[in-house]
Image 1 (cartoon, rainbow over the protein chains, first blue to last red):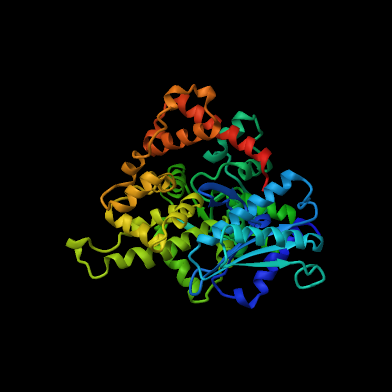
Image 2: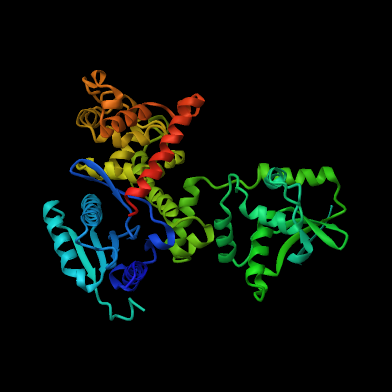
Length: 150
Length: 341
């Protein structure tokens, strides 16, 4: 599964999900639109990353979503540099979501099944560390779901 | 004046070799000014103040053709394009790429017959110097917001027509919403003497406040009420005077404990004055520049630039300006290498 396919799966997941169905849905994928940098204060220091998918609505009960695709090429957990980069990405997205004044917050990861547990563990540890308890985590690993992956 | 509106076959329209957008390139690179070369150069010429060529192309596709006809005048059995050369080059490129699609074969054109040179110059001037009056930021926000709320168009459909990136339109729509939700109510029930109505020109401050580091600082450090409600009050109180110079100071002021505390507690303290309260490291004078670490140098440079107005930056002498530009280039190159995510 390539990074682009996983990124596209996040977009499809959001668009097809009844939770996020609304006429004012803003959705932008890095592959297609080149997303802007996301900046957050992590332990009082400015950090940044570029999420693969950004989505939110404008009116009513507001939600905010950041999505990240991790292919097996991206996620070489034995490589310390890659590990540090992924760790920083999670830090930034969680801290950005934590301070958002919206009703629902989601961090969505799409990954190969082999890395699901590693990714889930990393995110949950960070959630505890930053006390980001109102951030919902969704991990997409249904590689056989033809609605998401073709 | 003898005018006629017609759908013309694009193969019988020649681009204007005197188009100011390309004259210099043709001369500099010694390019023969034939039809094909001119159209090629036009496709790579800078867009001036208007949208880029990619945005224009996307918009033409989304609206199923150009909204304004190009202007041409007859030259024998062909036509010369006086106005709309870039649009002609887009049609030509797409016809080359998709020869079977009839959409790109003809273009709406206003044909000026019996036109003399002075009139031709007037048309060029009118088109490129006066142009159309763009809507204000507030008017654009209002129009788009109503379209989406009335289900006339979805957000992605509007992006396609307007061109550009979705994040640009997102910033505009969010700013329009913030303005109406948090700024306009501050003026409800007041008369002119008490401050009048919310000035729509202030919307540019809300647009700037939606950019990465500024919205992150507002969301992180304003905890007692909605950050944009607080931001709106600062504008009304005159604490944030300039959209360009003052709004960008917010992250520096809010991330420092001393300036933040002073700025948030004193309703008369302007952001530019709060910035001056940030203590400079008293030892910095004793450290050689070459021995200071990168974070200290970066913090100092950030403060220095924060204290400088856009006007002063524009008037920097060439040595200082070149140094800043080179630093920007070097940093971008360096950062590209260390983190592609």
